[in-house]
Image (tube, rainbow, N blue to C red; front, side, top):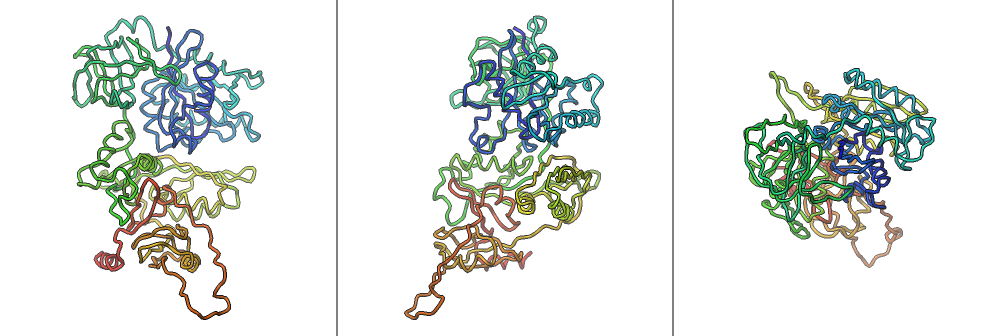
Length: 596
């Protein structure tokens, strides 16, 4: 049986997973109501976080499909997948055209010599402009240095939600057969008797975990055959080498994995029996076999410290609260999350490096849901030094806002050392492109939502390391800090709400040093949210007025990471997210401030 291997790549929300689900449904491999985005966080956020494998059978050919994340923070998931396939379906929204992540994934594909198949999706949108989108994609290919052969790409038109596609814009759309037929025509076969008869050569490009089988490698077989119970050699470019025996061998069929006795060249399989297997390693049947080139991943850009929660409310709701348990969980995460790095050298404080705020927020959220209780410090960017020059990460930021809000956005990003590289105005919308230091973007997304009244769209992607941009002017919010431990009372909160924005409701338990809100003046304020109304026998006009409280700000994980200041920690438990000062007592805080 012939095998074709493809990946579906696109910017976030351009319809990759919807199209993959529709292909599965048409070929009989999908189940109604079941999606490739199976993780709880993926369902809630409506984005793909983890790259996933599936396969369909069409006209006697097996097509292995890899669905990839569209968000820049999970770019490492895309980078390792592209090494294992032979072509990509590049999905572009017909209304938005190519976006920052489109550029990132396309650049990686072209560098590997892959010839993409372009699918203009969502052509039924009222504001879709197919000619504009096609022209913009062609220009992007030219900008990224595509070869003449790569420039001669095939274009298809689709409505992924309806499960239809067509080769020409005027054709009748019936189903997704035009896409599947184009894959058979344009993607080179990954299998063949000549490859099957050679010595085994395969590479690990992803990892999976099973509570019974342990760590498993997801592998692309380039040559030869892998058999169940076969003894194999594992090597990497660092000279690490070991051997083991295959205990289980699986291939992918639809959304399920299927146990098989052997798999041939061209296929993508999952193998168990190698507890130390890792991404990029080469699998051989002969010890003398040649090592395949390593899978390179872009380096992290931001970091924070993660450690044991030591607040007065520590240990109340968490199942896993010790440094050892947090360390073991991070070690387990490193096995499957290649974009993450962790420094364990500082005792019970673990320095975690990631690709962006969302990348690290997803890790914290997953741990929180598993029952972990922990604390994290404010995210910081990672600086590098080259030839005696200090470098910092910059991001390309694309913004689409109604024209009346563009001035506020340009002013704020200008203060944060952003340089505007492009501006385009059409249909009352301003499309802005900036080069901004990652430092300047930390905490900006919350302000952006307020400045644009929720009507703006901001996307960013890592651009480069460039010379240090100097100090950055940010809108600093002061913290409203509790001076007492107890239950917050409505009477006290009513008097405090005019001073800023509150994060808590009446009857919320608070402790000394906990941040209960932000002040608009930008200075810290120590307050007593537990203070009750003084009761007397005297009556006076106005003393018995009803209290009217404004709804508090819902402090989510991402918002808290954005609001957090350098002298604060974020306390994360399975039931709540709280900001607190590093030094809970006001006297200690003042003493520390004087020292510094």
